[in-house]
Image (cartoon, rainbow, N blue to C red):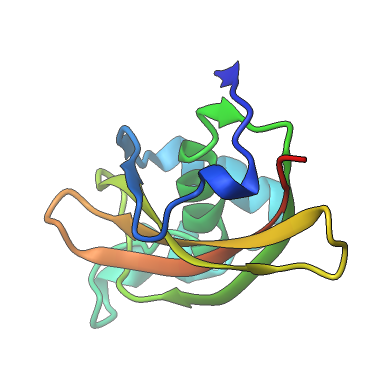
Length: 147
C-alpha cells in the first residue's frame, strides 16, 4: 500500500484496474458472523445447508462486499474522499473455497457543489474464479481538482 495523488482531471472514463484475488475461508465466515451477529444457518450450519436447494453455506453478502472493496485499497489517494456506495447487488452466491477479485472501472465524472472538487464514480464488480460477477456496486468519490 502506498500514497498516490490522483486529481479529478487525472481520472479517465472507462479506465479499468484489476485487483489480486482472495480465497474465502471458513474462518472468514466465523469471524464475520462474530463481528456482525449474523449467525443465520445459511452461513453457519453446514448440515442444514445440505438440505437446502443451494446445498452448501453461502457467504454473508456484507462480507463479500467488505473483502471485495478491501481488495481495491492497494493505494491511498489523499486527494479523494469516499462519499459511499450506490446500487449494490449480490448477483451470485459465494462459498467457502471461492476466490474473488475486484475490477474497478471509472464510469462517471461530474461537477461537485464545491468548485474545487469533482465527483467520480467507480463501478466495482467482484468476480469469482469462474469469471462470474458475484457482486456489483458504484463507489462514489469526491476528488480535489488541480488548481
